[in-house]
Each structure stands twice: as C-alpha cells, then as structure tokens.
Length: 193
View (cartoon, helix red, strand yellow):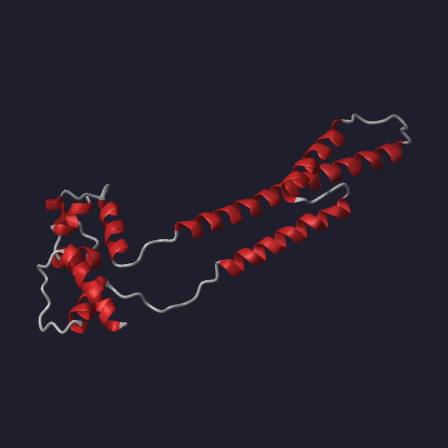
C-alpha cells in the first residue's frame, strides 16, 4: 500500500478528499475496506499523524473515573443495606447478630478500593473521599482535553495551491504523484521557516 503514493496523482487524491468517492482510486486497488491505510500514509506525510499516547492516556483516565463511580455505587448500596439491616434489628429489638456476609462484602470492596486508589472507606461519611477523588479526576480530565478552537482546517486542494505558490510555480501539476508532492511540501516548509 505504501508504494501506491508513487502512483496516485494529486488530481486523484484531491478528487477523493473533496468528494469521498473512491472510484478514481479503484484502479490502484483501493476499496472501502482498505482506503484507511492510504489515508493514514497521506496524513503521516502531510504531518497530520495522531498522538496515540495521548489517546491511550485519555482512555485510561476515563476508565479510572468509571471504575471509581462503580466503587462508589457498590459501596453506597452495601453500606445503605448494612444501615437498614441494623435499623430493622434495633426497631425489632433483635439482639442476634446478622449474617456476616454483608460485612465481608463491604470489607472486600473497601480493600480493593484502598489497594488500587489508596482510599479507605468504612462508613457512609467516608464516601465523600471517593466523591472528591472522582471530582478531582473529572477536573483533571477536562483540563487535559480542552478543545482549543483553531478555525476551519485547510483542505488538501488549498494545501496543494499553497505549496505550489510558495515554491514559485506558475502552474499546478495535477498529474504529479503524491510521493513527489510530499517532497515539495518538505521544501516549502523549509522555505517558510
């Protein structure tokens, strides 16, 4: 696939980038299943590669927030159940101890939370610790993922015109293959600096 940038012309890629129609690229063996591979190659050569490390970090942050929410809901339900059981026991005047499985479940869940996030929860008032940690992580996530408006992006056709103009060409060579165009782009970048 990578060698196809030596066959696809500026005209063919410009048409695809404007219309999304891959019919002009089918003669090079492209279809809807493999078009993403050439898009990635073109984006990489145009300097539009994605930062996967940041995406992974974003997903991990989101996962940890969701996990804390699950811990919060589970522990809240278990502690509420424990309080209700104790209230019913006091109301009925029962002095027998209840089944210890509820306390074991609370202890196990609290231990996992403490091991993973360092938050110790034993009572309902301790739930505020989880809530504070969730809020802290949400604020940090929002700060990390601020969207900075940069205006409308430049199209491939506008980029082609700009590069030919910067380099002083009087006419755009639409039959130039993409690999040669990428070399021109590098030259134009050096000239602008």
